[in-house]
Picture 1: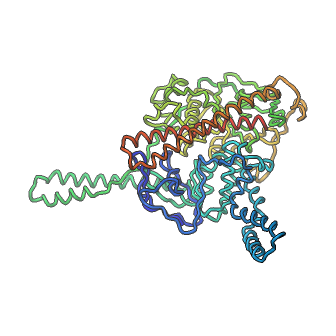
Picture 2: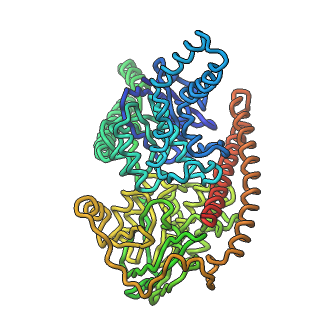
Picture 3: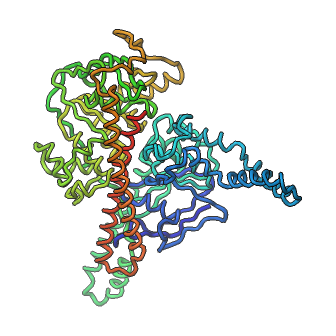
Length: 639
């Protein structure tokens, strides 16, 4: 179906990968993996023709069509409804539908044989495409990805970037391409949507190439692994866990082969040095010199991860009860999220807070962190020192600081070596630690903010989607660190591997309540699927009817005038951010146009332009994430 033939890609004078040869067969589900910066997204863009192939060739069989979901692909169909956007997958059927409507009207005045034949041909093709089921098929996919029926007629511009990405994904699934390229498809999905996507893809008739940091998703989905490492591509049969085991064996074998080769070369060099001045051995010496020169050195690709480690040190030990929540009630715009919730967090708890998108996971975490108003009481325990990581924490970063300085600001007690080791776990190595915060992308800033949270000596960590901008290796390091963490942890995550490895309790949000299962995520799923259960009966202090949410109170979330003022301010900021995003994208396009003509640039100009491209790309990502954060805030207030 698709042959990537001896493809190499050079950027800024360095090769990301060389001489890749890869044949994608029908109905394969492949995980494309590698460290951040190995070239995974670049390879997908080369396959799609978004980047020019200058070395090698990419050939696809006749009639094979490709679909692509990228991390930065957000639809510009702002005025189209979600349903209309996704339904564009049926472009031919929609065209036929329009033509048939015109022909029906025309037949009233011109029932010619030609028009009758055209109508018959169009109707036959429309039926073959199952055109009458377009809306049903589209709604089914959209609802599988988490949209409510009431969302389908809302314009795309009313949704955040994450929700628009779901609509883009729905359109691609409906198009049924022969090969789907998916770059981090689970990033904006909640757990039910991820499980639905797994079910859908497991029966997909085409081939799928997936880039993902979600280990559980890879294990369930892929039948083959393609690893970008050391500028080469290695292919493995089996899922991600099988790849990890086979990779250890491969790396050990390569290490032994390299050691044997080094020993052989040393023996030849010893012979050369011993007899190079002996005339009778001149021919033999020259023969061995040429032989050594022709040896293709084996590169050892096994990586030393011993320095990737996070050591937690608690400042103080908290009391047994970390947090006591009583009668927690919260909502927005007459919609109740939580009604009289009672929960207790005790020292040593590692709680996964789960639920479908829109149920209030991040809101509840913010209530626990005392960052949102609510009804009820929140009593923090003795000696509790919390540290909260969430998307909005990026705003507290010092833009003029270097990354290393930012961590030193919060952890002056730690040495530079300790902090650099910590930053290595968050994909900041070498001179990267001296980059200023202001030049980082949104994802990079998020990693810095997470590092700041974990470098503290807090005994109570609150983490909102901590794995979103990390690769698989970094996630593994953080899991190992948090497993040995002696404090208390509550987190929101859509990464099931992360949840399963860490949680000793599961809190799930349902029916305006936060319910508890005292066990691991796997045990929770087993109970849910095999026995069925509900949370303990909530102990209500007094009945609180839903209507009471409309009453006036001291809490700002009930005061409509303040909400209207806040919406006005947010909308103004959103308009400014939209203009900023338009300008940033325009600048990035201009820089990419210059890079496309790289053959006419000097090495110095190319290096400068590469830096400018990196900066422009980071700006677009950063502004996009800031735009999405503002939009989500507006939607949350309006809902």
